[in-house]
Length: 305
Image 1: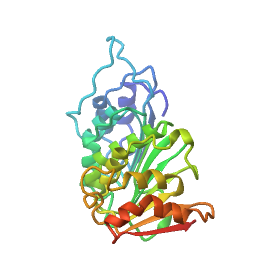
Image 2 (image 1 turned 30 degrees about the vertical axis):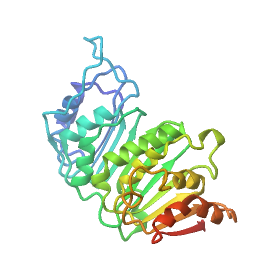
Image 3 (image 1 turned 135 degrees about the horizontal axis):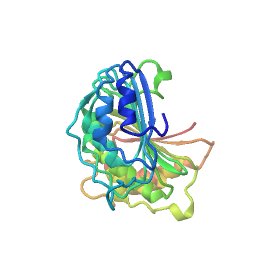
Image 4 (image 1 turned 135 degrees about the vertical axis):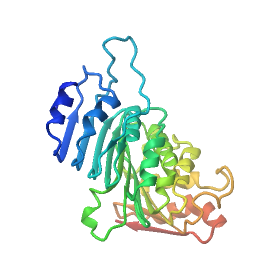
């Protein structure tokens, strides 16, 4: 539904308590608090799919000059059948909603956030860590695309065709590479308790080679913060474009603290390329050689996918 105003929304939903799927696009001219939404959702106990799309500009309350602050809700809406939750908007609205929705059967989170310098997400972290969303042997991908950075975490399941629908999928808008790494570092650090079962991590970039202006833009500390969230990961896959950046960040002389403390159970680094490249093998050795010297149990390989 697009452009439905409260209290009209509440009246409408109260007459459709057996609804199984609901998609709401909040209009820009409306100010909808998390409490108002939660009151409207509380009776939809049969809901299995919920999508909430907030406008990019936080709307202002008609009776105030400044945006109304958003705080964790005192209302809890129990949605026992909800398996898919989709959200697009600001992180503070997401946090307030996640705090107020009890979704014990959740299987899939698809979240798109607008770029901000900081992300404070304790309730989202608790949700991911406290449910069965991710199990032992999960697989994670951190992808840097032309217009966004993305975190995808898939549970280990027998049917690979279901990978795209289950798990945690978070997209943060923003095209500058250093901002992208900064966003992913914050998210992975904040979500670390829920990432403890990730066995393999893929770091991907949409280009085969980073442009000159983006090389060494992201500080090594950001990469280390990102990787620190995967403390039980055994295999690290790195796309060709990111090999020099990640390798430099993992150089023991550059790292803060001991080289053994970061990803302590890591036993393999695999560099991958979408094109046949004879230069990839020496690039891997040059980039990750210092780490391999300090931790010889970590194997270094490369593949042309």
